[in-house]
Length: 95
Image 1 (cartoon, rainbow, N blue to C red):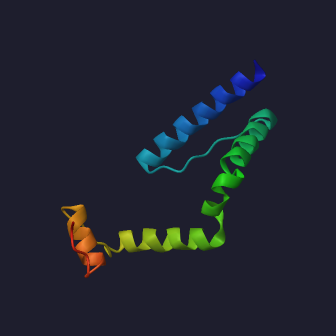
Image 2 (cartoon, one colour):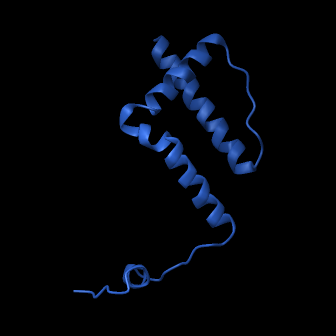
Image 3 (cartoon, rainbow, N blue to C red):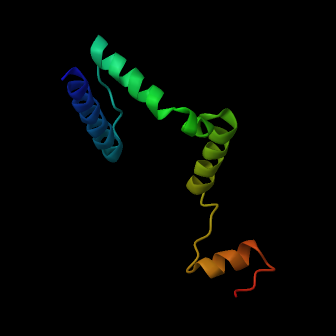
């Protein structure tokens, strides 16, 4: 029962975060000790070993660089996968 209640609270927090993000507003909320513990547990689970590579400093540096490239328009759109491969791999020859 307690676990279900905490899960419902986490879902409500996630909904609030999505709404805040969509509206461009900062997300602000106060957590009870129980909510804080549930959030910490959820974060720990999200950072499980199989996903820890994503949170490494090296990977996060690449994420920040990618986001900066996108924001500055340093990217190219392709109509097809073949067009992208030709651009990336000049020696590419479709089968």
